[in-house]
Length: 252
Length: 167
Image 1: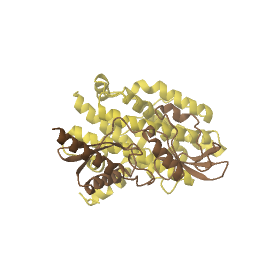
Image 2: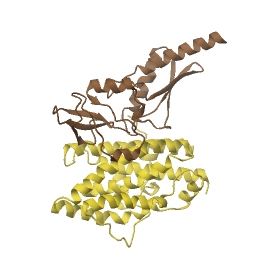
Image 3: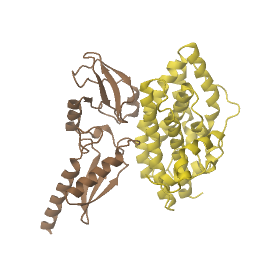
Image 4: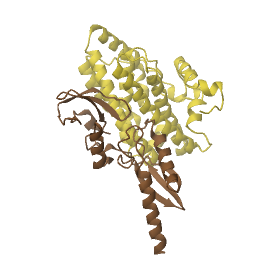
């Protein structure tokens, strides 16, 4: 596989992860359980959408066909989206949302930290900023997972339900293929499979305090990286892309 | 040759001063130079090229700030261009001493120094109240009114205040 093709694919994967999760998180705006969370969630969404924008802009440059961030976000179909299945999962209740955030950030923080040493200067720069933001997300989501897991009977039940529902999507975080192998060999991107131990340690630290247990997953769900998504992504995109689909080429 | 370079240096200084005076739209007590966002201003082929490092990935003010710098350079008589610099990534350590003092006077606690260690984010930090100086403060919310701030409360003078997050 050509390094350039692999780089483009990786930028789309990362950009899609950030955009889709950022959009999901933004759906809480105006609906969060307390005022502080109503500020915190859109703030985290902004971090992610900001990261997506820089990744898409760079993807457009690497592709060299004149596509910019808006084209990549608004004019691709669900099968062209490369995001992890985890990030497209519906918000569910607050427990689901916070656990999804923790699972993702606990992976992305070490991922971006290693990416800071990338031979690709643009990616290293994006990583330098994102890693600090992800550290914030781990702390914020982690505190909520602990508070709910070790909280009331109801909050503990909801937290345990979230662990049951979302743990089948963990394996996909660490998946490798031609794209990741090519970029690891070129010194451009870290190997996701090498981050499992650190992810486990972070989750273990939180789960011990939260009195939660990671279940054994016998049938992990994958497919997002090759464009195979759940039904929910289509619904998300129909909202996200509504304006450009209804009024093609529309500008603010 | 030397005359040209003196003119060039003067023009460059004038351009820097014009760009450096642009205030942050969300925290207007500090300028883009105080925040360390304005990396450099150089005159290249008669165009003032300002290099700007964005603060937070999702800061909605980034574009407004770039446009304001461009406008300030034009007002000072330059043709202007903005270049966004991603690497090295901006850190709150780049806020000048002057900028930190202005933040404090404005009622925003400046970020704790040595932002470079990501792990330091997990440790407890002591944030001093910008009004009474007490270190008996508590965090109300990790996220505040803008992407760059968190909400704190002083237990000594009971005033709530913004803390400029350390990244």
